[in-house]
Length: 350
Image (tube, rainbow, N blue to C red; front, side, top):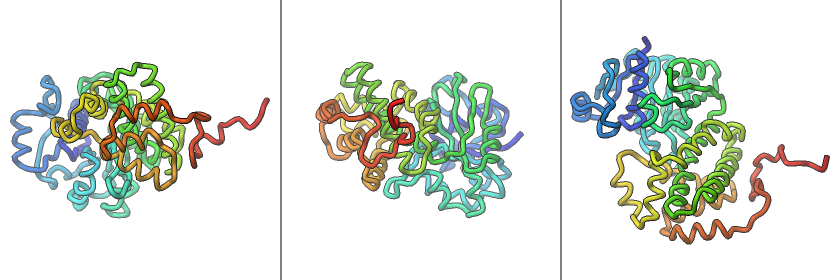
């Protein structure tokens, strides 16, 4: 059976390792230190994964990159977005030939505001860039690891590469679709985390389902506006990697980003919340990147802007909620410099 390396002992990294090992693949999970590797070998994936989950016999843990990446068909990078570049730099010298390079991170790099496939592409050999894939979709790890049915999307610029990744990643309970819109798939996965922070705030404030439905819908419009400005297809953003992931992340208490937003309504500081969590809420750093991109394009993104103000400027979130509800309204697809769905707007009476 094919050999797969997982870079990242994150919740998502270990979840992917477990489900692929259950499928029968030989999975090597790379830990940054021998101490961490020893702990995982002895104690398994807890407390990161639920206590009833154990590592299958097909999954091994190593702190050696040489061992982890030897003769693998694919390497899955399941690390926080702010750690992606340094991890790719560590692994780049071990990547051979046509090995698939799969990004499973859902975020944007702080400072550069770049997508993960761009970050990876800058750190590997040019001839290997065509092997980059991105994985995204409504994939809450606690459900995936318990073999509940789910679907996801793998995207690459090369259709042959996406099909290769699809065959490798599909399991009996995880349906993997393909796409060639790398930008759209990545942005959908990253930007929905920003909206999920706000959805958690809506729930925490007790505003009800009507308000949350409106918030999610307007959030998708902003995601699509920025996505189209960056070259994504709006059709992709209405699919699994956009709308699908947005629904799951904004609706589920299993979402870390939703949790952060809800906890903020209780008066806890952002630092306190983050320090108490197992895992990273990618929406926090992605909010700053998304707001930076929106400003660069001159786009109106009131939800992203106001979540940024709550997180980084200390603005009271109740004030922000009031501002959003009292915002001047126009056509729901209208926005400064938006080119969103312009080809779908009616051009006259029938």
